Image (cartoon, rainbow, N blue to C red):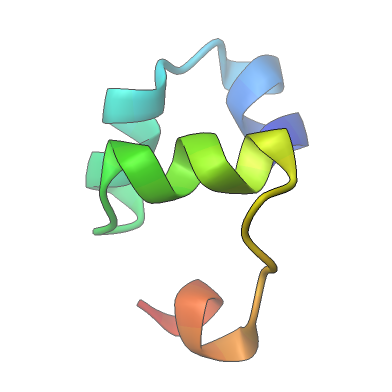
Length: 43
């Protein structure tokens, strides 16, 4: 996810819209405070 964001130079907000999540969860994942799960990736 982080690789996809940096390759496309997306902001956290843009990425959140793309995967129908919210910025705070993406920020948490990037900081390593949230574990990626299959349920998160399915959204």
